[in-house]
Image (cartoon, rainbow over all chains, first blue to last red; front, side):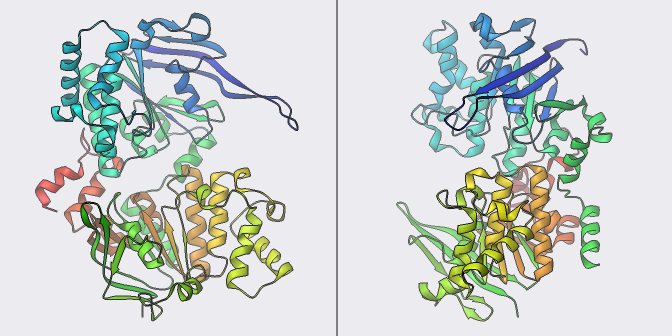
Length: 276
Length: 278
C-alpha cells in the first residue's frame, strides 16, 4: 500500500495580486510557497499551522475551488490544473470537502434529503427514486435517522449538521476528502463522535483524508502523516511519530510548547511552580 | 469570606414554548487570588451564570438566587445606576470575540481612556499615561504609537490584549474571562493565558475562566466546576479533578480528550450517559 500514492503535489505556488488603491501600491502575496506532498490511499495527512499560513489555500487548490499559480497536482492519476483545462465531472468526483462551520455550508431552505441528492442530480443521470434510496442509506451510514430526510438544517445540532456535511461530501464516493477544521467548532464530546465517524468511514470506503487542523491533540490522534506550514512554506513533513517525537523546525517546537497539556504530571508541575 | 458568593442560582428564559431553565440551582464561590474554571459544553449554562452575575442578561431572563454577594454587597437588589459603579471597576469581563467586543469606529486609545474616564478621577494627560502603561503591561509593542490604531488594524491576539488591558484598567477585584482564547491560534492562546495568569498573580485578583477546553483548565485553574445542562456535576481542585474524577460526566469528558485515547475509538459522552445515568 505504501507506494499507492493517490495525491501527488509537486512544488505548488499560489500568488494573489493585491490591487493598489489611491494610497496603496499594488503588491503580490504568495500564500503557498513550493509545497510538495504525497498521500497514500486510505491514509490521513494532517496539515497544521496558524491562521494565515496558507493551509486553507492549499485545501482550495486540492478541491479545485482555486487554481495553482505554478506546480503540479495529481489526484488518483489525474492531473489537475483548472486554470488551463477547466473542471470535468470526473475530476469533481475524485475530491470533496467538508468545512469548519456546518451551518454555514448548508442552505437553510433546503431539506436534508435534497442536500444529499443534489450532488447526484448534478453529476449523474440517476432516476429520482434511486437518488432517494441512496440518500436514505447515506443518512443511516453517518448515524442519522430516515425521518431526518425531510427536515431543514436549523432543526439539527452542530454535531448532526457536521454529519450531514460529511454525508453530502461522500455521496459521490470520492477518493479524497479534504476536511478543513471539521471539528473545531464542536464540543469535546461531539468532536469525539465525529472523529469516530470519520475513522469508520475511512475504513469502510478506503477514503483518503487531508485533515486541516490547528489542534495538535486531534492531529496526533487521527493522522498518519503530518505537515506543518508556516507563512506558506512547509517547515516540517513526516510521519506522525517522527514529527511529534522529534520536531526539527523551531516553529514546530513552539507549536508543541504552546499546546495546553491536560495530564496530571503537567498540572502538578504547574501548581508547584505557582506555589513557589 | 469569599470575594464572590452565589448560592442556588436559577436562571429561566421566557420562550414561546414556556419557560426554559438554563441554570438550575448552582452555587459558586471565588476567593481573592484564586483561579476558578467553569467547564462545560455549549448549553451547560456556564456563560449564563456569569452574565447573570454581571446583570447582562436580557429582560426575558428571570434570575433567582438565595444569595448573590460580591464583597458583602448584595447584587440582587442593586439598581442599574449602582450596578454600573461596580461593573467595569470591581468586576470586569472579557469575551470570546475580541474584535467584535471593540467598537470599530474608535481608536483603542480612546476606548481604553473611556473606561478610565468613567470609573476614575484621572484627567487628560494622566489618562493617556495610564493607557500607555496598561498597553505596556499587556505586552503590546510600541504602545504609545498604538494609541491611535483602530481595532481592524490589529490582529486578533492584539485585540484580545487590548480587551484585557481595558478589563484590568481599574484594577478589578474579580475578572471574568468567557472563553478568552477560543478564537485564537494555539501559540497566541499560550501567550494570552500566560498574560492572564501573570496579571492575576501580580494583582491578587480573583479570576473566573469560562471554557470548554480541558487543556486550558489544566493550564490555568486552581479549582474547577464542571457543568452539564444547567447543573453542577462536580467541583474539585484541579489536580484531584484530573487525577481522580468522581462524577461520570467528568470522566466522560476527560476520556473524550484525543490525547487520552487508548483504543481505536474515542469514548463519547453518550457512552457514559447510559452507564452513569446523568
